[in-house]
Amino acid sequence: AQKVTQAQTEISVVEKEDVTLDCVYETRDTTYYLFWYKQPPSGELVFLIRRNSFDEQNEISGRYSWNFQKSTSSFNFTITASQVVDSAVYFCALSELMNYGGSQGNLIFGKGTKLSVKP
Amino acid sequence: ETGVTQSPTHLIKTRGQQVTLRCSSQSGHNTVSWYQQALGQGPQFIFQYYREEENGRGNFPPRFSGLQFPNYSSELNVNALELDDSALYLCASMPEPYNSPLHFGNGTRLTVT
Image (cartoon, rainbow over all chains, first blue to last red):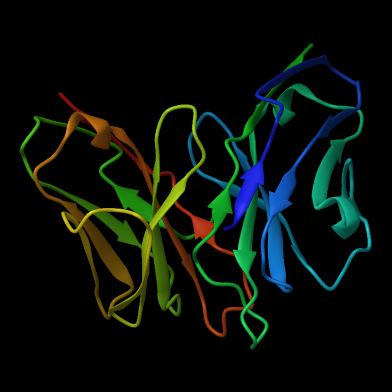
């Protein structure tokens, strides 16, 4: 069975602190996608990153970075120098990777981590 | 802007009633998925439509049904509403050839009293 665990329910930091959001996943598939989405109070899910199981390279995008480790089934997300605008609920998700390289619309989400960044 | 629009934004219904939620996707987005997000939880997959046919379903009873139309709009219908159906319902779409992540709308907040 596929499962995503985000053990941190809520995290509170002060602006400019670095923060890491943890994600551990379970799957029997050998090929899969991992995602991070951000959900601000407005409700929509904002796509942040997609990683396929073939690519364990870490990725950096501005203040955001992601650490993918298949050996520990983890896909952690770090925000450097956090800002108040980073306050949101962050979801990690998993989906199967189809043989034509795409991803199905069936994502398995974790329960989310609520991040509060205080000025 | 994701190009996915949902209506209405909020809705209040009574237990036992039926409800229809609507979603409009970008042109070319032939796949649409619907998710239910209970308060404090992650979204749960309800079902997926591709070119007007259901091609994937989560662990939801048959009273949850859907339609997808040729103009890239879709509907989620829920019959015999129960209190536990109160949630945020999210629509998401993606274009072919599937090498793109899902784009989500803002959701419809359904309250069943």
